[in-house]
Structures are given as structure tokens and as C-alpha cells.
Amino acid sequence: MLLSYLYSTLMLWNTTVASHENKENGIKIVNNYNNSKDIFSTKPVILNKESNNEKKSKIIKPPSLSSSNMNVIKTLLIKTNYDPLLRPPGDDPTKPRNGPVKVVVNILLRSLSHVNEANMEYTVQLTYRQMFIDSRLAYATIDPNNELPDFFIITNEHILWKPDSFFQNEKNGHRHDIDKPNVFMRVHRNGTILYSVRLSMILSCPMHLQYYPMDVQTCTMDIASYAYTVDDIIYFWKDENAIQFKDGLARSLPQFRISNYSTGYCTSKTNTGEYSCLRFSFQMKREFGFYLLHLYLPSSMMVIISFISFWLDPTSVPGRVTLGITTLLTLTTKSSGINSKLPPVSYIKAIDVWIGICTTFIFAVLIEFAFVTFLYNRKISREHSSGEYDDSGLVQIEKQSSITRRIININKDELRERPSDISIPMLDSGYNESTGISPTDANAIRFQDNGLGSLKWVTNIPPIQYMTIKYGGPKAKRLDRYCRILFPTLFLIFNICYWLTFGKQQLQ
Image 1 (cartoon, rainbow, N blue to C red):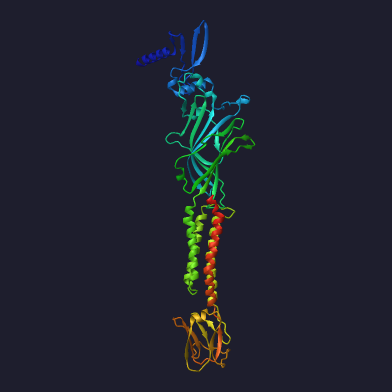
Image 2 (spheres, rainbow, N blue to C red; image 1 turned 30 degrees about the vertical axis):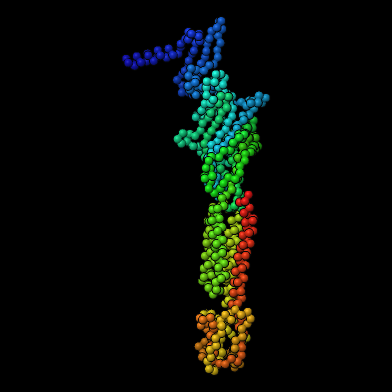
């Protein structure tokens, strides 16, 4: 019973609302609303005014027009038979469909980060804006008294047409939806539409790494229509502030700084037609401080440390070998870490030149040490007896004699460093070189190092003849003295040439 009463009341109310008459001005207002879920469910209001037996009809705004943005948009959409799948007409009446739609673009860069040299790409977050005129949505004609605001905001972008713009060099990307989709459209009084959306993308950027890590990279961002040719859409950059940078953008790109940027056009022809395209180009100069502190200074110090080998005694084999091998391995490890972040390219980079020359210097120090050791330990040549180094580095000369033992001290530095040959008293002529004498023979003579800077010559006979010893020590030490000057000088010359060649990129 109660349900029947409620149903009768509801039907009576609908009948009363559906038809009412304004006796004061003689205007009959008919509201026809249906229960469809379609966004166009609110139909326009028809005025039927009788004057001198003539009936006129026209579209007017509903009573709630000023209080609902969607009512205005719905009225406009129905008035013009709006189809969001069809592009709006242009502004040139001499061309089909009044010519192409002019789309004006500007970009706000929010962040620029993750420049990846190995994959040659960078990550950018931006606000993309485009403006165009859709005369079908102009509401100035239905608001002659300017009672409506200058624009309405539409958050449901799918009910209106918009250009099918895409980024040609995009690898991956997404829109931001936290906590609502970061997108809106503004409909202005004259039909101008502003479309704004927040995007994050990974864009490709072909890089030239010849001057790495003192390089300047030029990256681009290309925007074009995916389906519409220049007959339907033409893109333009905004006259002022086409590219805007958010405050603090430099902090999102610690290894680079944007040194220059420009806007241009990249219209191209394909098999499907000619497409309008916008190009935003910007130069990123690499910050050199990181590489100076973590690569160039440490590697220079390793090369200089390897030069210390020239000041060590030729007999300090463990010290000189350890110093050279350690610096060589350290430099090789550091260069491997740097190159692991770079793509394999077919050309030589600035970092390759630096690491290669530094490695060559350290390797040359090891080669020089090997040659010095060879000279220092060269065999002794003599005239009358066979002298050779034993395992302890001493010279042993075997002779026969039965005369009383004598000890003569010979200065070791004189023996090793005198440039000319040293004449040392020899044995009498009774010696037979073909005879083998045991090292334990009592008549043998032996040069021994007493640890006090002199050699002890032990013999059992008075000197009668002389033998000539050609010792390699003076030449070995002389080579070390030359290298103390030669290697640092060559390294200094290399630095001058290197920084004049590659460092100019950082000065531009």
C-alpha cells in the first residue's frame, strides 16, 4: 500500500515539472530530461513565444546555466552536433574544412635526470601544454552579458577532441595519476582549448663521446601528430616562453648543466604523407669536477709515484718491481670501472687517450728497470782469466799460487762507477787457463764485499800481471739519472698537449 502511494506521488511530481506555464511574459518553457547515463542527457531548452500569431523558436540557456560547467558544455555539444572524433575546422575558409588546425605548444621542464651514456637515453618529467581553437565550443554567443567565467575546466578529456600528439624519440613513458589524473582542459569563451598533462618519459639521445668526460651533448625532443598530416594539423611553438624550466632543475641533473637550448621545426615526409613536427634541442655540458677528482688526479699521482723507481738503487729489485706492478694494476682497475659505464664505440675517446698514455708511462718505467738491471748485472770481461758472478753477485777469479796470502782493499764505488776500465793486479804467468781449479782451492782469489763500501781482494801472491774488468754499474746508474729528467718532462709535455686538445670543450 505504501509503495503504491509513493509511486503515485512520484508520477504526479514528474507531470508537474514536465509542463508549466509562465503567465507573466507568455513564454512557455519545456524541460525535457531523460534518465540516460549519457553525458548529453540534458537537452537544450526551447522557447515558444506567441506574438501576432507567429511562433519563433531558438536555443537559450537553461536556468541552471551559470551554476554548472557541464551544463554549458553539454549545451554547446548538442547545439553543434559535436563529434569528438572529428577535428575542428581551421581558420582559412578558402581550404577544405577551413584548412588545418593550428596547435600552439609550450613545455615546462620539471626535472631532467638519469642521463645514461651506455643506452644513450635520458629521463625527463614535464608538463606538456597545447592550445588550439575549436569554434564548436565557443560560448560567447549564448552569453552576451558575460555572465559566465572566462573559461571552464574539464577534467574528463575524452569528451572533447584534442590533437594526437606523440614524442617521436620516446622509449618509454607514463602519465601521472596520483592522486587524480594530472590532466585538464580549459574551454575559453572564444573556443580556445588549453590541454595540459604531466608526463614522465625516457627519450633517446644519440651521443658523441669523442671528448668524454669533457664532452657537450646535444639532445632533442621531437613532437608530432601521429595520424594527421599538415593538411589537418600544423604545430607552432608559443611566441613567448615556449620552454620553461622549473626552479631547482639543476639539482636534478648533478653531472650536467644545460648550457644552451633552442626550438625549431622538423617537418618530415613519409610514405603516408607530410607531418608537422616540433623540435626542442638542448645542450648538456658535463660537470668535470667529479672526473678531475676521481680520475685525472689519482692517475697522475700514480704515474708520478712510478717515477720514484728512478731514485731507487738498481739492486732494490723487490721495491722497484712492487712499485711498478702496483701502480699499473691500480690504473688498469680504475680505467675498467670508468669504461664499464660507456658503450663500446669504434672511435677513441679522450678518456682512452689519457688512460692509455698513463699506462704506457708506467709500463715504460718497468721496461727501464729491466734494462737497468741487465746493465747492472752484466758479466765481467777480462783478458787473462774467466771471472763471473756467482749467486751472491760476487766476482770469483781462480789462479794458482803458493805465495803468502795478501789482502788489498778496493773501493767498490770506484770499481762500479768509474767510466773507464779498472786495472787490477793479476797473477804470474805460470797460470794455465785450461786447468780447472776448485773454488775451495787455497790458491784461489776472491772479491768480497765487506759491507763498508769496499771490495776485499784476497790473494796469496804478489801482483805481477793486470786484468781489465768492464763493470756495467756506471751505465745503469747513468740511465736512471737520464730517466729522472726525461720521463717527467715527457709527461708534462703530454699534459700540455692533452688539455689544449680536449680541454677546450670545457672552456666554450
